[in-house]
Length: 82
Image (cartoon, rainbow, N blue to C red; front, top):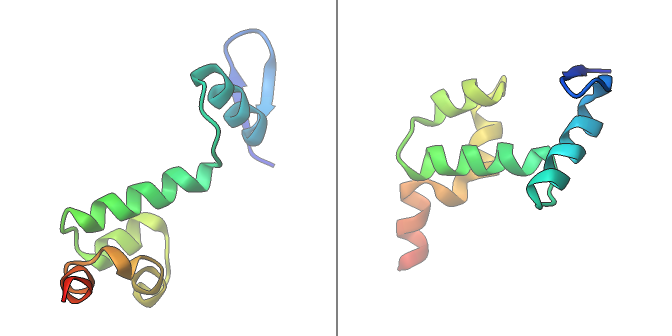
């Protein structure tokens, strides 16, 4: 289990508890994976190299990244517009 330090004298919290507390404080509700997905989508939409994004995400195979995020690559957007 991953633990994070809490500077409000609550000691160590699980990552999940820390995330939920932060979201509650910010007034938002979504899972950490949403941020991951949004970041990858934004990188690819702005023209980042697929292999570079795969490396950032920790994917061992570029095909995993391509299959998951192919909807935001320039080629797939152009094809969808036709």
